[in-house]
Amino acid sequence: MYEQLVPCDHCGGRPTIGRSQRLIAPCPDPIYDPSRWGRFAGPPRVGDIARRPPEAPETEPLVCIYCAECGMQTPWQPCQEDDTVARNTVAEIWNRRLNRPEAEKSDLQRLVERELGVTDIPAIIELVSRLEGDWSELGPMVKMIARRLVDATVVSFDSWPIDPVLNDAARYRKLVQLAKWVEIEGERYAQFPNVYTHPEHQDMLYEDAIAAAVDSLPDRDRW
Ligand SMILES: [Zn+2]
Image 1 (cartoon, rainbow, N blue to C red):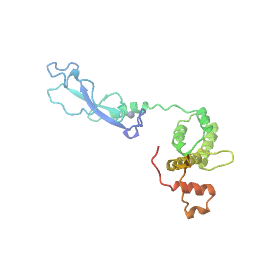
Image 2: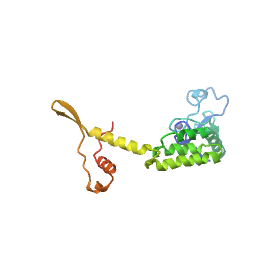
Image 3: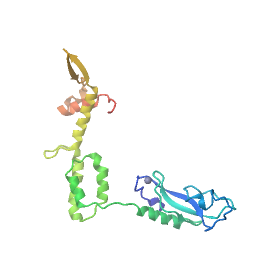
Image 4: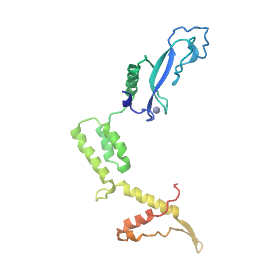
């Protein structure tokens, strides 16, 4: 069960098993120092597993599942020497907290209307995993989206995918970073660098050869 814990619903962190202890005695010895281990010592703390001295009020061991990143935690569950049952109980509670809203046809339709690129693949897989509905209807839409992802780098007549546009934008930005101001006859001009073209690239298509040349320029600091 423990191996099947889902990541934290809040921050995506890895759930961990937490251990602690709490008082059993309903009315601990009032003479015993109450601030340290007595009734007023506060709620159980993760990691409080040190065996207490025999004169301290009696405690029972506890387990929980918590997220080490953000501290989200299941309620404490008392456990015995063999804590399998208690661990399964808290693991079940933890997994129940995961709230994955069902995705519908309209979510897919919204995707169809958007420009999709390779970077959208994880988000789309996540959406498909939550899809509920009539698959004879959803299937073709999923297929269409998958096809568009595959084609995201290929230009066709009816679509201009986003990836080449973004790559060209990155090249332009690089050129701008390397541009210099020059003064000619009192006027200011932006001068772009001379871009070396590798002989290997001379047989490529005009646009591809220029793109390869710009790509070979040294990278400047990002904005
Ligand atoms: Zn978390």
